Amino acid sequence: MTLQQLRYIITTAQKGTISEAAKELFISQPSLSNAIKELEKELGIVIFSRTNKGIVISDEGLEFLGYARQVVEQADLLENRYLQDKVTKKRFSISTQHYSFAVNAFVDLVKKYRDNDYEFMIRETRTHEIIEDVKTLKSEIGILYLNEFNKKVINKLLKENDLVFNKLFDARPHIFVSDTNPLAGKKIVTLEDIEPYPYLSFEQGQYNSFYYSEEILSTMIHQKMIKVSDRATLFNLLIGLDGYTICTGVISEELNGKNIIAIPLDVDEVISIGYIVHKDTIRSNLGQIFIEALKQNTQELM
Image (cartoon, rainbow, N blue to C red; front, side):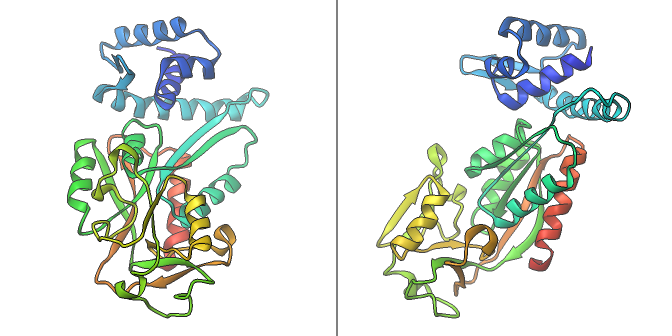
């Protein structure tokens, strides 16, 4: 077993396919496949299961990947300390629903990481994909919410995939509207107040279940409803159509501008926002820094 083989395994898990990993590693697909098979044979385990659609990391592979990441991270630290002329690129990825505090924490992470050579990724994506990303270790950390309506289904899915939810804070429901919306002057709005306006929600793809919705009260019937697959478009439609979306109320003027505002929604609901991780892996140094940044950026919200 070599460090190179461990790097091959980590990159393949991140990319999800042998072909994409081979491109990233600048080697041929057969060479990469053989290297992985040789390591699997040496260890007596199956790290990746081969299917018609590509590769799927096995339960044994997930456990092995956690250890491999730790070994490679320690090796990188040694190389950075004693082989200054050799640059090793650091990689780190998170997957999240749309939360400004997650972006702010990611910015803090990048600012704290002083090395020049890195490849970081923040994926604002759908709920099911967040869970899948953390399950397969494509992302080390995922950020989503639980409430009374979805927690039974989401917690079951997390448990089945050996994932753990860590709560950051509880929030009361709000709506986002533009500062020119007729509701903008209200201190609080009711469901009756918002009924005449277009309701905007983030489309969840093939897993478009009420339980995976990024917005609470997903089973409500709306007179006017628009689904979008791009969050920037959603915010543009809030302004252009006097629409609204239901949210946590957490917004950053620095990131979202001053023309989107949050108004409390008068409903008896609580939203628990937190991060998910794989229970069988130890947090990387970058993962620990990001989690601390998350806590700092949400401290005033707790």
